[in-house]
Length: 264
Image (cartoon, rainbow, N blue to C red):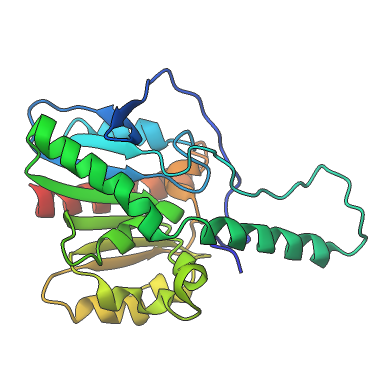
């Protein structure tokens, strides 16, 4: 079992001249908006802060809010398939099995209770130094699981959370099989969950997460982009018109109005 579907889009590494800074002991990339006292915390996918359009999206979002992109995996050591490396075994399933074991080990080494202090440091810093009154969050892939977990905290700092092509299946690795589908039961704030066609059924409309969230005393929304592939929002090929349209709909039609509703 992997946190991401096997059909997911490949890594799309980018570069940026943006310099990081520390908030407490947490390394972040800060995109200020002096006119706003609202902040969006951004959690990257398994490929890190320089994955695809992650930083570009932070720049766009900073036209409306303060934005903090949190570096959750500074080592940038997510296990990748070594497709160009000769494999000593002739059986392809052995290659896949070994990779799955490495991915599970990677995920289990990063339980939420080890990640939460990073978030706490950022929240404290932004309240103290930038007078932030309200926080929202968005995450891509693995980062979407971080958003969901943060949204379950009894004293969560979040007013809302957004999951782009969510890898909530990490919860099965971290806390036990079947827990990912029940994660919605524990969530305490409104969620926007935007899934790709190849994402697990439980994060799509009409299934377990949706039913859990619809039973809450606040409004959430799930939408499936059935023709999109896991990773499309920040790693999809924008030269393909259908993908570009899917990105625009996820961002302009769903994410921004959701943040406007819950953050102002």
